[in-house]
Amino acid sequence: MGKKIGKVAISCAITGAIHTPTMSDALPYKPEDIAQQAIDAAEAGAAVLHLHARHPEDGSVSLDPDHFMGFLPSIRANTDAVLNISTGGSLLTTIEDRIKPSDVVSPEMSSLNMGSMNFSFHGLAKRYDKFKFDWEKEYIEESDAYIFRNTFRDIAQVEKSLGQKHGVKFEHECYDVGHLYNLKFCMDTGLFKAPVFIQFIFGILGGIGADLDNLMFMKRTADRLFGDNYQWSVMAAGGAQIPFATQAIMMGGNVRVGLEDSLFIERGKLATSNAQQVLKIRRIIEELGYEVATPDDVREMLSLKGSDKVAI
Image 1 (cartoon, rainbow, N blue to C red):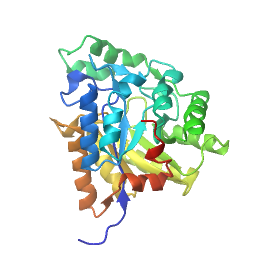
Image 2 (image 1 turned 30 degrees about the vertical axis):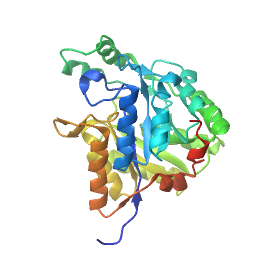
Image 3 (image 1 turned 45 degrees about the vertical axis):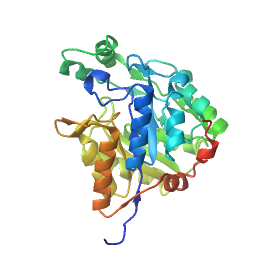
Image 4 (image 1 turned 135 degrees about the vertical axis):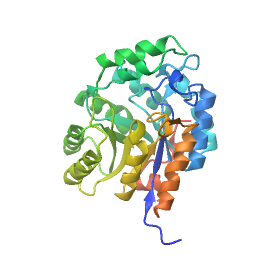
């Protein structure tokens, strides 16, 4: 084999807050299943595990730190992956509630959404005649009325509560071009220090569409705004997941996969696990001549505080 071109970090988003148990039997919501799928994803090559919690009884979205602690100790004991705890796990609660799990866990990374937006997935409700749990249909249908709130005050509160207090590094989730300018403003006012880590997100209704031209535009805009002071990754929803990840690899970026973002492994075929998606993108990375980054590679790349400083 020829010389490796470079290293690509794989993030895996294990369960999320959009998909519901009816949509896929593979979507984990019990703590033991979230833990096992996360461990398997790390063994498959995911350096970063992006984590949400669910109510163990019915799979509904949870921000209860105790639900996070139902699976985090097992993941921590069985992998060296970077733990990335979501601060965007609910569209219906306050930023204070969304911060709580990370405030308890003090992870190396947390997600941070860089702007308020419409955030809807109500069209999914029409795909299913029956639902496993009573909450699912209304939750999906009502999303056409959701505003995902992430004001500048909210963003500053997350940085103070997690960045300053815990030394957390952020996965700055940018769902549209304006979010990049929001991040630049925050950096210019001293809120975040380089190097920042940007997750370009495509294909969420309310955000920028999953068109490859938009990936090029987002990347050019970020280059202009941040120069060499950022690292980046790509996440695309649904069927755009693997094509966008492949394009990002060839552009020198990193990638995110996982059942939070897509329930499928190929067109019309549900994935059997998060690890299956990780193995697929790992194969693409390696066949293109790149190398999969390790957790320690990511820690060095993003200047993370280290796993020994996580409160688990």
